[in-house]
Image 1 (cartoon, rainbow, N blue to C red):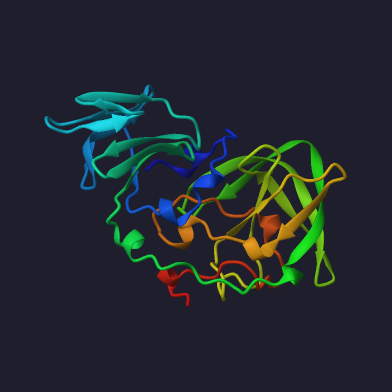
Image 2: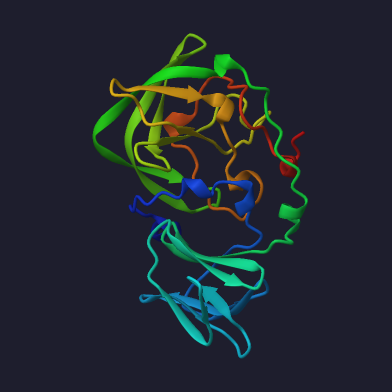
Length: 262
């Protein structure tokens, strides 16, 4: 794994949509210019200026974009937060770039984290946690550096604006990032429940596109965990410092059972 300075990125390709239990990661491998074999993926993997390469042994095969490949296969230079899924039998090998680093993340259907998954505890829905706010766009998107669940890793996102709202008599705001779908927003946050009843590092809330007058609804009943809440093998971003809310938002998903929640 390379140093933190090389793990920064400015590409704005978002992949919020893969934050779901079906994407829980049983393996995470960091590539460099040395060929490496991994116990949960075929072939020898390496990366360099021309991108990711795998050398498959005799009898090994991957299916990439529906095409079987054997021997040497070049994935090329991957975009930040982009990736390719290669099928290996009943497993999916994700080849991706995160924080400037090329990685391989095998996902096997029989991984205990998936087979033992029984759902995530959550607060009962309460209408008081659905609040109306106002989206305030920045004059130009602001590059915003955030940490990651993996120590030393950093992500940079272009924040298009912030959402201002009132909760428990306090005026609050959250820096927003682009969400999945045209005009949608995503906010990452912590609050006074973080590390007590909700996952300590982060939660995410997806927002519908703001109305013409900037009105937007923040329904914290839909606050969701990211994959890092379930496994140490995820590279999820942390909230920016200004998104650490001083109120207790007793809504949305709680600490997963995999982390001792109930």
